[in-house]
Length: 187
Image (cartoon, rainbow, N blue to C red; front, side, top):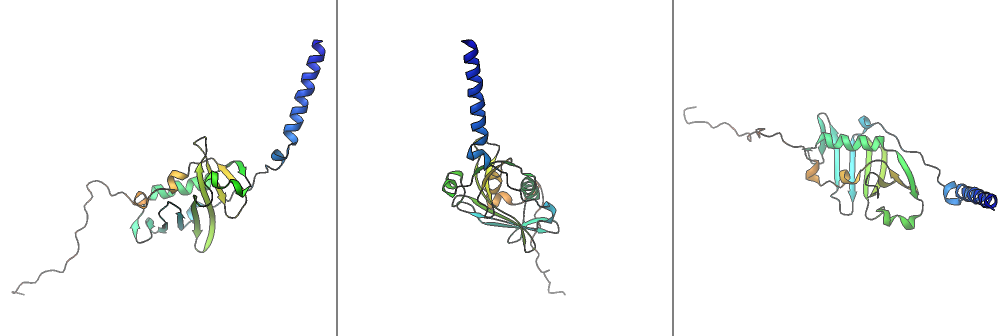
């Protein structure tokens, strides 16, 4: 009797293993290629989306500037670029557009574009943070997949414009406005 139970348990485990490996969801989980780029080649970053203050950052000779000429916090920009360049796909979350909204992709996502001159290096829609709090859902370009990547990007891209501004060192003197020298009647 015990031998029959053991054989039945082994057959059941084998059948479950075979089913798990051959089910349609697991065969369609081929990982897409990640878009790779060199952060030093990026010369402009654009951020926009619902609930996000649209922002353009430009590389300048001495760091990064916010469109309009304000100096940007170079460390914050470089941190974002490094995270985008180093991100790895954890898993394909869905290929079904009906599930995009629940992952924050679409109307609620942050649209990010990186360019080198006129060439677009990366375009992504960044959705919600993953349930593990260590990943982010995103969609690359027009690809159908929503991916979970191993970086927490949402807090970086949802930063308000003032959060991108360079911090003035404490005690730094603000230069006085230039005025024309006053002439006296003796001159």
